[in-house]
Length: 123
Image (cartoon, rainbow, N blue to C red; front, side, top):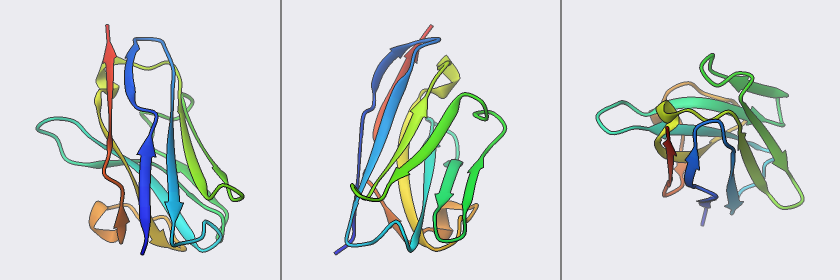
């Protein structure tokens, strides 16, 4: 059984940092791409970043480029999202998702999902 478990969310002040973790079981980061998504109230779920060791991809959307950093620890089978220079607009539920080999764009293209972790950034 595949499980993705996010952790590390919480409350931060604008300009602060949080590090999210996505612990995977039942699949290997050698074979699966892991994407980080977020969904704010009333908005669509959007992919922020993705990492795929198998094809050597590390991707970011423009709004988080330079502020967020994705990384993977294959020994722990965990992917991290380091979030710096947080802004109130970053407030959302953050999800990680897994898809075989390739970083995909749209949420429906990912096979496995975590339960999400809330990030709230105060001004």
